[in-house]
Structures are given as C-alpha cells and as structure tokens.
Length: 209
Image (cartoon, rainbow, N blue to C red):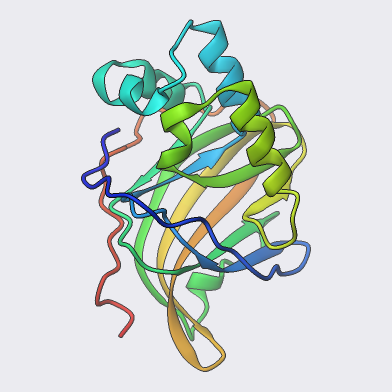
C-alpha cells in the first residue's frame, strides 16, 4: 500500500444515512490522500500491538510487508486511486441489489476477492491519515467522532465477510455523484484473500460529468 499524494489539510465531513440493508452517506472526503481504508479499526489497533508495530502505520505499511499481511488477514481493505472529490458512499448487505448496479447508475469499477474480519461489531471507512499516528488515545478520539450521526460506519455481526468494491456514479437529487459501494456478505468461516490487487486504481475523475 502506498499513497501517491500526501498534501496537508482537509477534515473528514459526512452527512446522511440510508436504511437497514443499504446504508448511504454523502459528502465523504478522502482527506486529500488517494486512499480509502475499510475495516474493523479496533482490530487494526490489536494487529499493531500483537506484531509490535509503530504508531506510524502509514510508514510501516509502505516500507514493510506488514501492510500486505494486514490485508491477507482481513484486518484492512485498501481502496487506491481515490481522487480528491466528495463521494457518495454505500454499504450494501444481505444480498440487496447494489445501488451501482441499478439501471440509473453508472458502474465503472467492480473488484471482488476481498475479505474482512469483524470482531468489534462495526465496519468503518476511514482515511490514510488515520494510519499516520494510531494510538489508543487517537483511536478513542476517532471512535467518539464516529458515534456522531452521518459518519461512514455501520454495525455488523462479528465474523468473516467477503467484500466486493464497486465505483462509479449514482443519481442523487437529479445529479450524478461519484460513488463507492461496498457489498458485504457474511461467510461461515475465513475467506481467503489470495487474489487481492491492493494497487488497483479506482479513479473516477471525469467519469460522472
């Protein structure tokens, strides 16, 4: 995992949420770094402690193979090539038809073969900057912020999930908005992360105009 741009600034800003089998969030920003990360972030902190990793996981993951191990172990799912745009983010569960596969949507990217392990009852979409200084204190502050309405986090039963990542554009109030959709299906046991391309470019710039 390696972001291509790390300028300064920009706070995460999210509003709105959908219904039970499909949760939707508007105006999700990537914090000016071309990555989103998905996973059980408390599991990531435990992974860091168990492997004796430094607080700067951003440096660790880009200079050693621990980032690849975190992906293989279902701790984190990296989404690369994210342009600096506001996104509509969708979590789709339990066999619900993905929003980006509806007739009115425009689907550009679809990548399967991902898996995630959930041990703390929730899956969260977060930004690369959070990896730059991950401590119990910063994690606690982050979890407190994500308890506010509209943050891109949903409750999930613990266990293993296979995940498909879709990207494109969907209609929101009559306008096409760049969209990421995460389709999660629970599995009885561990799902192999053997075909994941962590460098796949999910760029959407210009696609939804």
